[in-house]
Image (cartoon, rainbow, N blue to C red; front, side):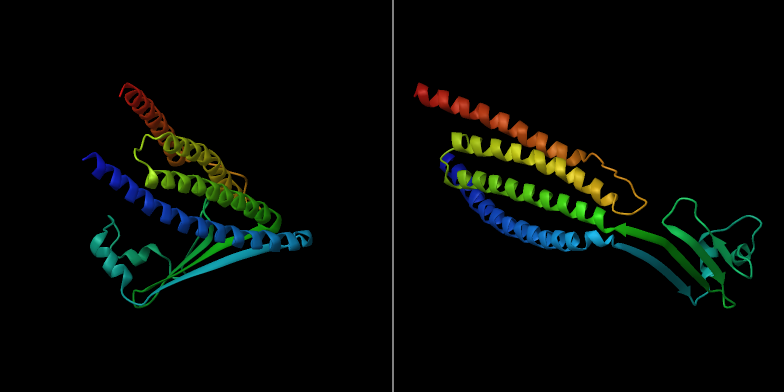
Length: 237
């Protein structure tokens, strides 16, 4: 029974080892792409380049839109929902939204035409450069953590017991490598949220990442205690 359990742990370690190698390759490829992006942004950063993005959204309904909606929604005192919109149409300006203006017009056949204009977004190349640098550091931290995880998987695929010292040592290193990943992940989100010219740095605390790190550290304590018991048992025998 014990040998069967150890074999399953060894197989899981081998599979995890291969997956870690693939993830490391993908992470390094992402770092290369980000490095090219950082180099390109650095070359044009002195030109004070800015990017402006504006988007329009058009919705056109040729069918009896109001007639279909009336089957689902009824308003007291309103016989025809199309009466809520004037013949010239309605223009709505949201107070707190990325959409700057919404134009609503009704058609003679009962159809509806909606046009929404998204306000202009200005992006500073300097802020984009800073965000790209943080993203590069983020993937570098991920790559380092994956190397630690690969070492843990290697220890598991070759171990005679999951409570061996090299397994616990590899797990401890992996747990510590997750700390910079968690911190830079939150910083990365904050830097990208501030890319817009009118945006400010807004870093949110990722409770999921913090919980993951905490769970790994708890597992380290459990395995360390198991290794101590294993050592005492071997000394007794």
